[in-house]
Amino acid sequence: MDHFAEPYRIKVVEPINLISREEREQKIREAYFNIFNLKSRDVFVDLLTDSGTGAMSDNQWAGMMLGDEAYAQCRNYENFVETLRDVFGFEFFIPVHQGRVAENLLFSTIVKKGDYIINNTHFDTTRANTLHKGGIPIDLICKESKDPHSDFPFKGNMDVEALEDFIREKGAEKIPACFLTITNNSTGGQPVSMANIKATKMVLDKFDIPLYFDCARFAENAFFIKTKEKGYAEKSIKEITREMFSYADGALMSAKKDGLVNMGGFIGINDAELEQKLTNLMILIEGFRTYGGLAGRDLEAIARGIYEALDERYLEFRTKQVKFLGDELMKRGVPIIEPTGGHAVFINAGEFLPHIPPGEFPGQALVVALYREGGIRSCEIGSIMFESEDPTSGEKKYAPYELVRLAVPRRVYTNAHLMHVALCIEKIAGYKDKLSGFDFEYETKYLRHFTMRLREIKPVTAKV
Ligand SMILES: Cc1ncc(COP(=O)(O)O)c(C=O)c1O
View 1 (cartoon, rainbow, N blue to C red):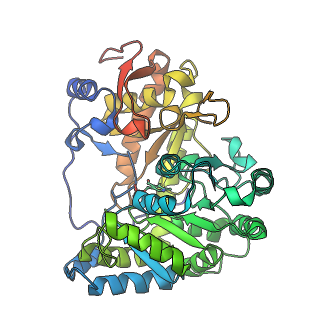
View 2 (cartoon, helix red, strand yellow; view 1 turned 180 degrees about the vertical axis):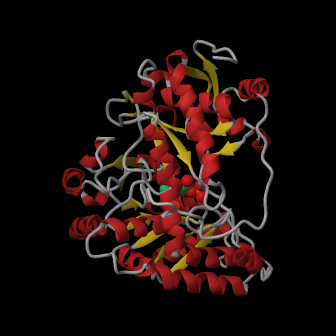
């Protein structure tokens, strides 16, 4: 790969500390092997998520000082709406404090018990919010994504044929909305092509079903369209974004990703009647319509962050840095979902640890090993997160892949940190056959990964 360097320099630093192996062993046990229970100060390189963990720019921090904290109609709300209209083109924008609130508002308003919500792949919170309102989440991911080693550039795509078949089988009246998650987080941060967005919209138009984007990583998706899809190389990221969103009837965004902020989100929509209903519910649970659970300064940081995310030099560095980590792992024989996506490297733990069956969660075994080996926090995206029940037979289904996500926070770590991760995984590869799986000591019905307590099936000693 060409040499590449950050298109920014570091102005503020935050110390991090690698505690001793013995301490790490004690901490992971005290956390019941649930990395969400680990204290941040006990983590050295934190790749748990790219959500809300990015570094803001000097321009955003300067904007924070211009926070207008009036309860109603603060000037930052005006900047917020103006920016979002300019970038995404919808008529109405409803601020919320994070993405899942947008999901809650929309699904509370449009989903009836037994309705289907279709997605290329639901993220955990979209899935949980659909189920919580009595809906049935359906994933219709493209066939190319089923081969983890295929280098098809748009493995986040919807299976458009399957979409049409599904609508014909179940009936459009049972499907209040269809989503495209861009990029598609749960299948490896893989992008969706413009052609697929258009084709999805064409099918939905036949049945009068609205298309929504779950667009937390819209800028990374637009960058992949620019660099990998014919006809877009000469277009700006903003032009590509406008075209993408011209096919959508609405969008939900967790701004904690490509909004380059630590907290925030919004719903964008054109339908005035729906906007009214959503706003009324939002006022009930989040706050007045011009702040939506956020401070004025947060709205300002989002407005500035959205423009910064359109910067091609930033997006080029970002995607190259993620690819750098993926390449270092592949060089060491670690199986990952190829090609690397926009925000994370996804290790195929099912393939890396074939001796651990899906029901004993190989992804979690690797997550725990990474913490023990190098103080690295990562996230299981496998059957702990996505085990489901067949809606008709009630039979348990494991996740399609047992993955470990190494999510790279935006503008936070250098490549030296990522090399530490690659070298730790290389060491783990030397003793991986000794790793053991887990079972549950405590779990909840929804989003169990956040609060679970686990037991190691065959306890491993501190020095494996
Ligand atoms: C694709 C996608 N949708 C929705 C969400 C939920 O957003 P939030 O964590 O801000 O509630 C996330 C968070 O990671 C996400 O990746």
